[in-house]
Length: 317
Image (tube, rainbow, N blue to C red; front, side, top):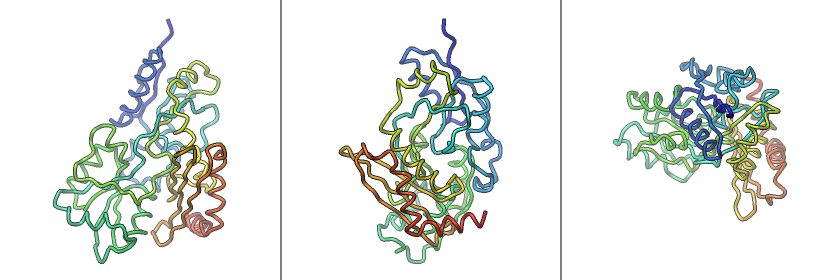
């Protein structure tokens, strides 16, 4: 009898939901599987802002080590947390169909309905003199928010989604920014939340990646049963864009690729950390011609003014 496939996961409610989803998909394909819980560096230090922690791989490193030393056979990650260069000896075995890619604003209380009208306004920077305080640990979200609302204040917010929701409820903040998919997957999205349709997401936001050891044909083939090729293509384009711009979690780079009518529609941007400048790009190509779209878009955005923002960020680090 074949041994169960050991699935490595972080201990947060969202991470366990993701790993359990993969476990169920494996079972549906005839493969027994069990969860193995592993703490990550990002779960241990909940105070330091992510962009001060050298955050590339901070949520994946411990699982990578467990995978390489044989403690687990596969690991499940929020794809936006995975460095664009996987560690030597680890390969992508599947990408699940993407859920919502949107960022959402969770307001502190229902009394903020009046302020929410300001935040939903469509006109860039028409925010008058509103001075809200918004919480997020993401430098990408911070930069985009300050570009649109330069009068606002951004505070740091760390922890898993449950912890962050509790902190918002107990704080003096006006609201906090979350990935919509994370809250929706575990049925925690509050009624007093708003889709931030204007905010471009992190590359691969809303997608789940499964990885295994290179050469493990059994696990790779098992995961291919639920691999979603369309999501894999779109997220690869987004991650190529990020990689070409030498970006990580500490760089305010956003990207979104979507497939419609056999075409890939791509949008990307890079924003100054303080929100003082933004350069963006949009491109549409046939699916058959989209393999290098992320790299092409990155080259063009650098030529259109993005290089100055990248250089400023690099000099500050």
